[in-house]
Image (cartoon, rainbow, N blue to C red; front, side, top):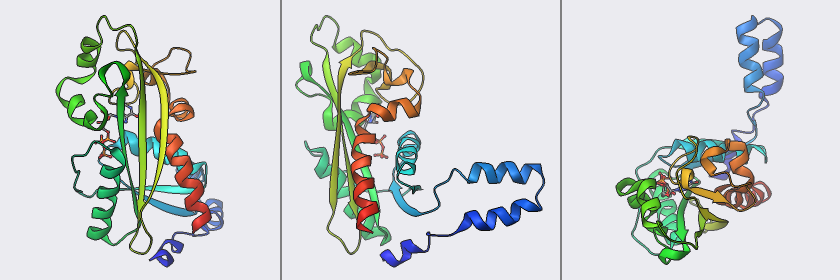
Length: 226
Ligand code: ITT
């Protein structure tokens, strides 16, 4: 199966240069944009969340890995442990597609709420949302929280491997910012100059985020293992 991945190790830049010589301005602009695409290894990210994909694509590009979005309906088991959830989805996708893939599962863990919503973050976001979190935290002084991400890589040939990333921070007193997704408007990462994730560009969020930290561990392993 991993031989298939070598299909993606194409030497496109040379071909694009030739093409460039006879191209008009629009084609040149297209090629310029393409030249920032890391032509090298590909890693298939199974997610229905385009924001997560976009963040991951930037991190993987730091390692010359092209992130490809794969939309597959996978099982999402109920479990208190997000590693078990990520692992089960990755294994299920490999069984369905026969491709090497990674999935990423994340959650927001609030100290004063005993780690809630944690593995139930998706449900809590859909039901009470960010405003509900602000209300639950009304009058709470100790506002420490963290995001935890687990990247699970699975393939038909290799045992599943998991990579963890965490970022500590605080729950803000009010929602701020309109970038990002999910609980970004209420989470201020430590060292982020009191900005919430929703007040940061993808590049800036990736300097701190749980997801970027887990993905960097994954990318280092992926580029050395294959
Ligand atoms: P998948 O298709 O990849 O499962 P998802 O949106 O369901 O995408 P997760 O299960 O990993 O994502 O995350 C559960 C919820 O936790 C998600 O819906 C968000 O509300 C929240 N969350 C996770 N990562 C976040 C982040 O970086 N910033 C803000 N909220 C986040």
